[in-house]
Length: 68
Image (cartoon, rainbow, N blue to C red; front, side, top):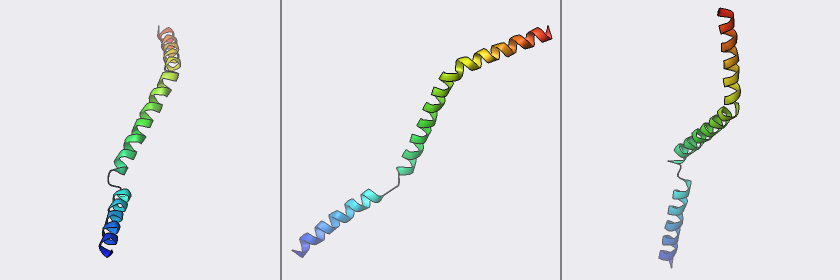
């Protein structure tokens, strides 16, 4: 009977150790943060890209009329 308890405790300890290990967890978190930053950046650039292009065209036109 004691042998069964010892094996059950060993199995429990092995599962507990595997669940609390944090070796690859930090790498996954950094990858998720990087992916989120990339998605947000692309969305923001898509949303304001046309406005920035039009503003730069206005500045370019104004500068060329002043210089010419």
